[in-house]
Length: 449
Image (tube, rainbow, N blue to C red; front, side, top):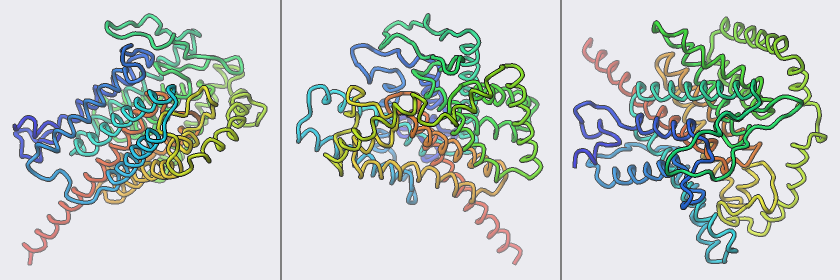
């Protein structure tokens, strides 16, 4: 009984170690998400057969089991992120039920089932992170692993850029099959667009933009003898971003960088600007033509096929959304065969209607608010900067959802829900530590009197 009750949150039942198993579980999930090619699946399970999806569903079952068997409350106050997640899930379930009552074409019924299952798995990861990461040490450990994952992803992408090959076609795992041939890299402006282990360069950009603010903050705040090593992921991610030939990656990481600046000392902000300028200079010298290509991405306008392909489908998407305006057609039913808009927010409007789009925006906003309030409540610089970095990561990942249909890509959605959960955990940790500090101050004051 103790083991089942204490799996997720041992300190709630005064376990011997006071530690949570959540960091280990979430680390395994991170490895399954970022270290395996995204096209490897259990063939008989279709789109839900990816290892990280199945592991996420296991995580939801684990969280539910913990809620049924725990003997003490796991939440002692209102949590904005859990409330927002509940609203989003209720809308998604209502949309699914309405779609089934209304009747779905055979081609949409199975994707609707799979979509709801994937959404349940992402919710499980968010809840495990929010409720299971109970100490700043646990959060710090997981953030280090996210920074490491980003650095390794960037390193693979740089090798792909240099060789012009995906380099991962040889990876085969017993029990897993290829859902499609891996052709995840392409070219733009004469330069290779890397994708790491992901299905598309845009999804690769999500990993970079999500991990960069985490990597920078860890490198700045590490005081151990190995502190210089934490600058390696920062350098790899920054260079890979510049060489990604991706508007989305550059815009999202610029947003993350701007969010980090306010919590840095003035001198550090100046150094960051100088280092950024030097990086651009190095890229200019080492990779002739790259800076001009990147500049052209933002000046070409609608002549760019990647932009026109998005905007050309907007009219069709809005027309489909108007048919089921409030609850939509059902999550996962806006198939690429209909039209490709490369905008997840517009896709949510079609699939979940106005209610679903607003609920998802509320979920993202709740994650950002949790990070912001955690920073405000923090009593020391480490927790303050850690909270700001998670806020920046959530904002960057959420912005990336406006550039492609992110829920169709396992890595992008997985990282967003993971970072939302970490933001929720920091909100609780910061408020708990602030309350404990207040009680200590009150006790000291009372003792002096």
